[in-house]
Image 1 (cartoon, rainbow, N blue to C red):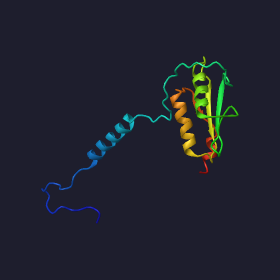
Image 2 (image 1 turned 90 degrees about the horizontal axis):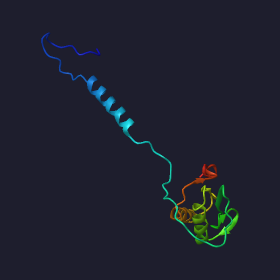
Image 3 (image 1 turned 180 degrees about the vertical axis):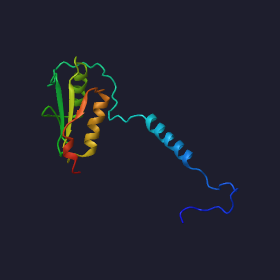
Image 4 (image 1 turned 180 degrees about the horizontal axis):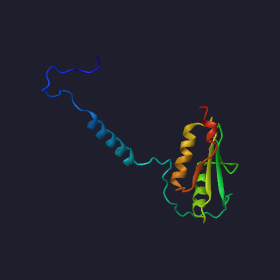
Length: 141
């Protein structure tokens, strides 16, 4: 039989009523879910600093693209650049009004430390508008 029968009519029930405990646990669970902050997928970057340079770099006023090939060469809008020159270009773009977008497109075979160095340069240049292009290439890795 599924139910336990008591031996006498006047004995108190010895089982614990768990329904209120379950109700309290569900209310607490819902409160915790509501109060957890929403995760944002944004990179915090500081505001730009001023920089002065006499030669105008090849900067697009709307958007600029940084690509990294498998050999580790960094390209600014199609032309190879070193990291110090990249920093100068980024400083100049941040002083423009409006600030152009920066698109970063590393090759899937590019070494992580090269991409990390480029991201560190963009952080130091205080890039504000940045996006990653071609993330679908990393779906198979």
